[in-house]
Structure formats: structure tokens, C-alpha cells
Length: 156
Length: 287
Image 1: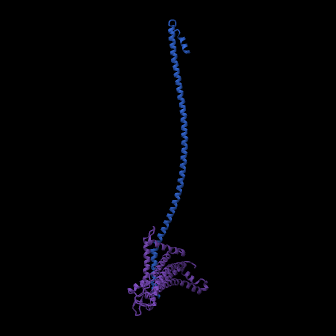
Image 2: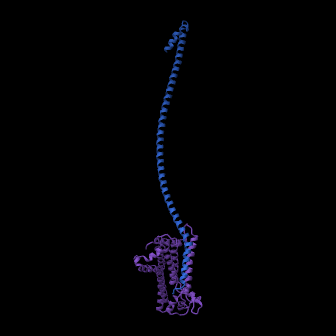
Image 3: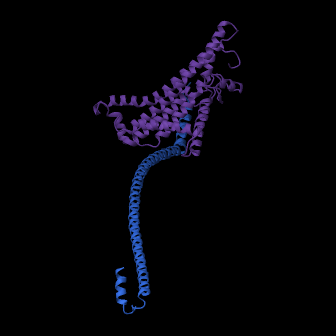
């Protein structure tokens, strides 16, 4: 328990240990701790950024969805309108066409009637002429009374 | 405990004696075989046990930490690296908290002090007779296991710290500044002798208090371990009394060891913190 040269030995050992610790041990460990602190901070920042971006993206997504829905309902409304219009148009066209066809048919019928009338008239006239011819064979000259026959035909 | 029967006081003395190497009374060099012989060796003798154990522990500390530092990577730390980083971070925080100037030496110094003292103090928790018994069996007469119960070890460190304090005081304030601090405070230049006395005591008290605090605590703790161990040594027969003593030795040494863990860590921490504070004061213009 007496003070002796151990004191010097301990002091020298102490100095050597401190020197060694300062040169070999401390700097790399501190460097690692700093690096890790940095990487953790970076990681946290990146996480925060990612979260923020996710928020933005989901907001954007919701907006898009809303827009799309609006557009879709617009398109549907337009389509309905267009369909109604087309139906309307088709109806109008059909009516016009029908009318036209009807008019055509009427005209044709009229023409037909006219033609039949013409035919009948001709035949009646012919018959009348034939009858009259038969009756008046002797005294009536067809050529002389053609004018008279035509006027009768006209009246029929 | 050491083969032949010992009285209690011999047992205590045996435990408190370092293995001292020096010049024997007959003029030859060798290991002292009694406390008187060790005393007669004077200053030029060395305590082999203190030197060897503290060297082994210091090397162990540096080996573990240097290995961790070498293998370390900034990824996820595991095992030893985690532990090492925890201690380094703890020391670094302490230094940042109490040391205001910039000096790259202080933190490694604090780490070395803390770890080395902690390891040396922890030797106290080894069962008190194991190593001396083995040493005795190997023919070594004395072995004091805890280096910090040898004032040489504690003073060795505190003198190292003291040299640094003086060195940095002179480096930071210049020789004039340092002398001025010693002589011109607190009473101005007309109270020079009183100033010198007060500041001198103040300065010298630093290493002495550092060393004696650690030494005193560890010495007292070791002493109590020895006394507790003596209780079991009074085992003579399977009587009720000696069974009781033996049982209480186990309980008491367990309790004291658990309590001692606190003291061991606390003393290492105090030595480190005071070193940081003293060095901080050495770096300050006024204190």
C-alpha cells in the first residue's frame, strides 16, 4: 500500500492507452455513429416525403376519379340526348317517307284510275261507235261523223 | 484461504498486500515476502500485480473496442458493436454536456478512463479468494486483484489528468495567463500570497481528490468483502452458529456485491466526469 514506482508505470500505461484510444478506437466509431445518424435522418426524411407524395397522389387520384365520373355522366347525358334526337329524326323521316310513299301511291292510283277511265272511255266509245256503226251502217259515214264521235267520247 | 491456517488479521493483511518487486534488504532484487519488506524497498519498487492486472484489463478494453471499431459498419449494429457504440455514445454525450471548448482528445480520454476504471473496479466482484488462491498455489505470495485499491494506480491516472490540466491551461492561456490565474485571483495583485496559496491548494486538490476518492471507495469496498469472507472462514463444525455465519456470508456478499455494482460504475463515472470538468476549466479563461 505504499507509493512506489508503480505510480510511474501506471501513468505511462494510462497515457499509452489514451493515445491508442484516441488514434485507433475513437475516430472510426464516431464516424460510424455520425454516418448512421445521417442515414437514419435521411431515411426518416425519405419516409416523410413518401408519405407526403402518397397523400398528394391519392388527392390527385380522387380528383381524377371525380372528373372521370363527371365526364362519364356528361357523355351519358349527351348520348341520351343524341338518341332521343335520332329517334325524333327517324320518326320525322319515316313520316316524310310515308307521306311521300302515300302520295306516290295516290298519284299512281289516280293515274291508274285515269288510265282505266281512258281505256273504258275508249272501249265505250268504240262500243258506241261499233253499235252506232251497226245501227247506222248504211247512212253514217265514219269519216264524216268523226268529229261528232270525238265530242261524244269527250263527254263520256 | 492460503493453505496454512491464518488469523483474521493475517488474512486481512494478506489480502491488502501487493506483490511488490524491488531491492531486498540483502541487496538482491526480488519479490517482497512481507509487508515490512515491501515497505523497506522504498520508491524504486513496483507492484507487479497492479501493473499486470491493469495492463491486461486496459488491453482487453482497447482490444474489444478496436475490434468493434475496425469491423464496424454504418448498417444495423449487432452484439459487441452495439454495446461498444452504446458506451461511446454515452461518453460522447457526457463530454458534449460538460466540455465547452473544442478538443478531440477529451472524449477518447474520458472513454479510456471510464472503461479502464470500470474494468479494474469490476475485479472487485470476483470472489475474493479465487485469484489469490490460484496465485498462491502457483507460488506467488501476494496478489491484490483490484488495481484501483492500490493508490499507485489511482494516483497514476490522476497525475496523468493533472499533467493534461496544467498543459492545456498553459496552452490555452499562455504561461502568463496560467501564472496570473494562480496568483491574481481572487483578491487582486495585492493579495498575491493568499491567492497563490488558495489557487495552489485548489490546483493540487484536483488530482489528489480524484485519486483518493476512487481509491477510498474501492479500498473500503474491498475491505468489506474481506470482512464478509472472514465470517465464512470461521466455519469450524456443523454447529448452528457456524452454519448461520456461513449462510450470512453468502447473503451478505451477494447483497454487498449487488450494491457494489452501483459503486463500481458510479466511481468510474465520477472519475470520468471530473476529468472532463477539470479539463473544461483548464480551457476556460475564467473559472
